[in-house]
Amino acid sequence: MSLAGVDVSPPSTPEFAESGLGQGWEPAALLGATLLLLAFGLVNLYSASAFLAQRQELPDTFYVLRQAVGAAAGLLLLVVVARTPYRWWRALAWPMVAAVWFALILMILPWTHGIAPEINGARRWLTLGVTIQPSEFAKLAIIIWTAHLAVKKQGAFRSLSQGLAPFLLIWGLLLLPVLFQPDLSTAFVIGMLGALTVFAAGARIGHFVFLAILLAPLALAQLGSGFRQDRMLAFQDMAGHSSAAGYQVHQSLIALGSGGMFGVGFGEGRQKFGFLPEPHNDFIFSMIGEEWGLLGAGFLILLYLVIVVVGFRIARRAPDLFGQLLAMGVTNLIALHAVLHMGVGLGLLPPTGLSLPLVSYGRSNLMVTLIGVGLLMSVARSVPDMPTRGAVP
Image (cartoon, rainbow, N blue to C red):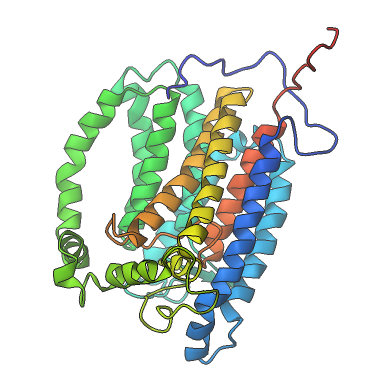
């Protein structure tokens, strides 16, 4: 849906209500679905991670307590962001991109292994008293910055050099250090978030097709080498690679198939006992499907659908183009993560290592998601009062 031509500067600036969530049912539905997902995620995270923690000689509540601390911090940020006028983020767009770019560069320098150690063959975490994953915050930064510049570029999207090229330059500066970590799936998500935001603002689809053709050889080269090639081959022939590169997805399908309609029962799943890799993170959807069955997985999907539908309704009702693009970008972030994570668990996509929003273990992703929900709430609270039916003007 193109938002080109939408009035970017409303004649009046709506003020926040003194109290409450805002106009309409959307903010309450969004908050309710978010809290349900968060609570459901913490419960299932304990079941998925208890054995893993014990095997690492840690308390069985180690991972869930760390996640709960991240959830508390994230909820606090949600409240602060929700009560902050979303237009203030336009002034922070460039500083956010600069800060994230600096953090990403810091992680790939050869002399920074002390604060950015290599874990499982990649350098994705920055340890400065607390451990954060800067690439997660890059997703939020790219949404805010792209929405900000797209408002200013409304009259230039017909030209590739004047319209889309400035976006490509900044996107590239963020994507390159992410690729060097290496983290192709996160780079893909960041690029998609930027592209979807610009397309919604009115960019020409022909420009994206042209760029896709130019970048296709590079993408094929990335997918055709190293462990990525093994994963692609395993995806194409899962049965033939079930004990090697396709092991993760093979075990994921076993977990989902074991769940049936009603599941084997909370805490009774067997695949988390050393069979299903990363049951608390990359494959937590499969673990939920095993213990809660099709009904539990369906409930989870329903909550995500509520967030996505409400997010796009908030975008449609936003008072200006920046608010619309911001709300759409955050909704796209949650939807992309959910679809890609569940697609991997169902064997429909090659393994990506992406978290399931509000459910998987990972405090950086959790906090970014909750900040994003706060941005949606901020946009929703800025919607002008709707006249009461039958009221005298």
